Figure (spheres, helix red, strand yellow):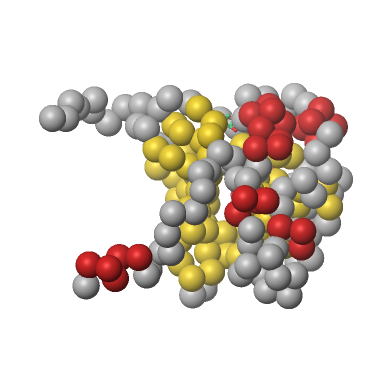
Length: 191
Ligand SMILES: Cc1cc2nc3c(=O)[nH]c(=O)nc-3n(C[C@H](O)[C@H](O)[C@H](O)COP(=O)(O)O)c2cc1C
């Protein structure tokens, strides 16, 4: 049996990311969970940013941003960046998170996040009170101590990575559990 709740308060498991806008001099951090990879050729991702906040304007102005994957170790700092505005405070100073120059774009990355993605703004569209930004991924960074094989960027150790998962609807943070299967392979059991 199921029950229905309509379209409000949608429960959805999401990654917690910290999006950095601006430059090394005036960088701001905003917590964004409404994020997804969009295309692989060219590599793009999309983020959904409310029109009321400080970050949307900064992305429009600078035409670039970085997406930094938050981990359980920085849960408090990540939440803080989602309940305060860059209009009022310097979130790097308040959280103690460290900014580090990107390789290609102006917006910095966050050292404490093990995975960092540099994006150039290629498209945007407003839906309701939200701006949907499409970023072309121009560079990625990963902490070498989170790799099983230091020369293979695909060998990430997810246990060491420990990404912070956010559940909308119930507004809860969780960590991920243990590996239970290989995607694109386990389903072959039924073929
Ligand atoms: C866990 C979490 C996830 C969030 N996800 C989003 C999101 O996907 N899009 C958004 O516009 N705001 C999101 N927010 C709210 C913004 O982070 C918040 O409005 C922030 O204060 C805006 O900061 P700014 O004014 O410095 O841009 C989220 C907040 C939290 C705590």
